[in-house]
Length: 328
Image 1 (cartoon, rainbow, N blue to C red):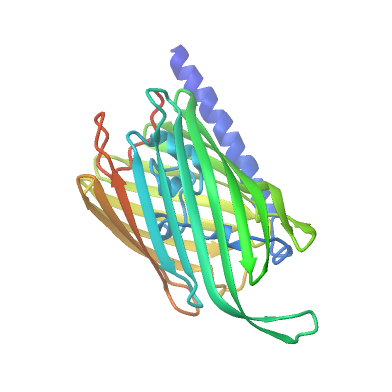
Image 2: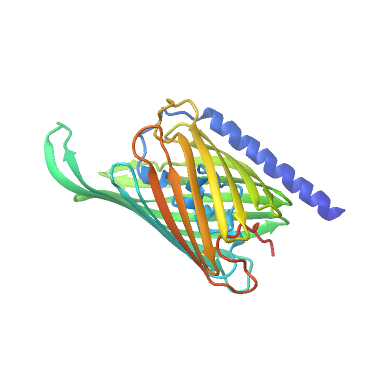
């Protein structure tokens, strides 16, 4: 009985936090667009997440989901490696890799991830609109993550991230932080996360803020059928707030079919971030492959592929499994 009351209090706390997060999204708009650096940090790195319309705050026991909510690391068992690649609109390449697992025999999980965006050579101009010639443009980030259970069904996570950007000979370096919570109880789960807050970047003798984002989500999962539904609300500091919904069906942890939709609230209907997404995953043993397709209203579709390798040990399920975060 005492355990049940504890779970109810925990659920009430998480629900209240989600309500506060949703209220924050109602205050966000697009007026701050362009006022922050490192905008590439807002690009999700995982094809499985992309295929659900970007909805992932409340689910995940994998490195892809941990990129959006570090609390998802708590579901990792043995060591795991993940990689993804995408060619974005405009021909920019976006590569991401991560590794993580359990720290010894403790309940603490850790992760290290890196992302590189290569924009190739751009036609640079000075403040008088005079051409400066072609300049290579690249951005990168390296993150150190951790997560651990803090109460029955409740896990917390955090991350620190070093960020760098270069255009020709000029550039900047800075830091940003993530924090998140996930709560799991039966078929229901909830999550909240803050991404890329604090810190900042020094560029050209000035201090610029990072593209912070705050959000929350809920999910329902029915293990017997392999179906789960996810709904997120997110409020970036430098763009419109967004609603993201996704569905996923898994068959024996060997095949996954996904679909989702993202809507930038208050933005034009042809905003490049609006639109449906689709994807699939397949795996055998410790190897899992993911594919995600995002179809914007205008411009080319974005394709992302991913590879997930996991060492099978200690009874851990195969890669691609969506087992809820453990609390031991």
